Length: 102
Length: 382
Image (cartoon, each protein chain N blue to C red):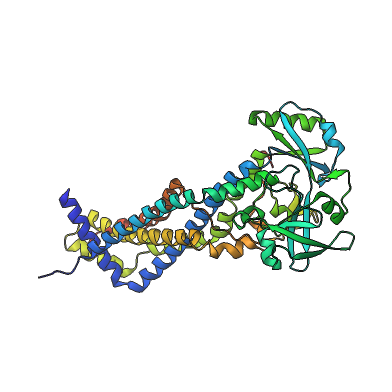
């Protein structure tokens, strides 16, 4: 006579399967990072060829497009009391005190 | 040992049955828990990927960029400053850069206009009237090679540029809004003074000499600000730093809400749960067994939430290009690079996420149970 599988067995098997998937994701990450090496090389080559300084992630304002080149107080450039008005400004944090500033 | 393992299996059996007795409540908790882990893990994987990529790609940016400042604001660099810099030991090349921004009212987007450095191996200066554009501009304006792009210059005259080439799609992360043009076109388009540059690039072969060169520059030209490559890299490290920027903005409130929710759920025992503990103790369970059983209840929930949340986050970031974050990152920007994050997974970060999502909940469930379990079963049942 066949007994139904115990709940603990089911759970432990599910944990084992999830752990295997987690391991698989690490292997997948390694393989994909290796496969992306030519893309990174292309991007690096363009950065070197054109003397680029920033990622083109935030293109809405000049101080978010080139955070490394912006004035230190660029968020307040329109008016000394003006608050940050671009949404990206909340993602690009203010310079950290004590660190040499860009 | 076998006895111990067998005991744990029975406890897991019992805990699973106990969880199944109140399916609605526990499923709702699992759902919220999984969502919190999913969002935390998505931000963690996404920012780590961008951070590594920025570090790898921007390692090729210029060693020193010299900006001129007037009254604390960025100003154009006089060409004579190149001569005033003179010969500094360690500097292998120095030249002016021409670049700027152009707001295109037709699509309400900002372009970065740039003149390729002369002698650039891959991208020589485009011929007069020609431009090379990034894939983002091409997509937004519907342009292909050979098409014309008409823009209004600083003097109000229309300029028609011919698209000579597109920058490779694979480089969008650094080039989506770029428009490369010739130096003469750039100066005429912006009515840019002939004796000025946007800034100056200095190449220094020996990385140990960079700081010294920057010091000499600050002394020789006190109205300038040198920006070093290491500062560019540090800027991006800070922008995408774990516990900074993105993570705090997106996560802060939500994580706190979940902590309150989980604490309330785990710390406040219902009358029914108290009675259950009383009954278990009166039929012979020891305090340790009750604690172990409740530990397993917490562990089952938090482990399931961690695995589900993390694996979904991995698929979301690296297979769906972090589609949920796009509106957040995009902000008001019209041009957004179409790119797929490269999986750079940091094992230590995954371990930290595991620790901070699984352990606190499991421990939070045990403390109130311990308080109930050490009291007299008769008193608990009443």
